[in-house]
Image 1 (cartoon, rainbow, N blue to C red):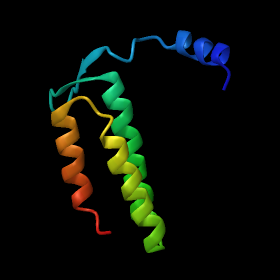
Image 2: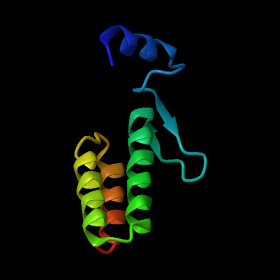
Image 3: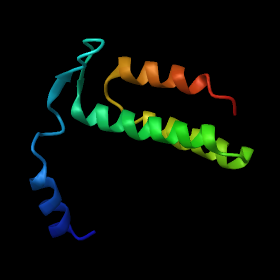
Length: 89
């Protein structure tokens, strides 16, 4: 993607990724960026659960753990890594 295209996409966002929000269910406060990252990681975890081949599943877990390193909210990161540990490799 070109820099101009990237800038155009960034300007289409309604809220800044650093905006803090509160979950209406558990009242946990987090940044939108962490929320988007968590959704992506959860999608990777679901892909792992659906994967029939062990190698592909292991690769998905590695990707999810690497992505978790980019999370800045330590509580979200801790919860996500704990969830990932429950998934058989």
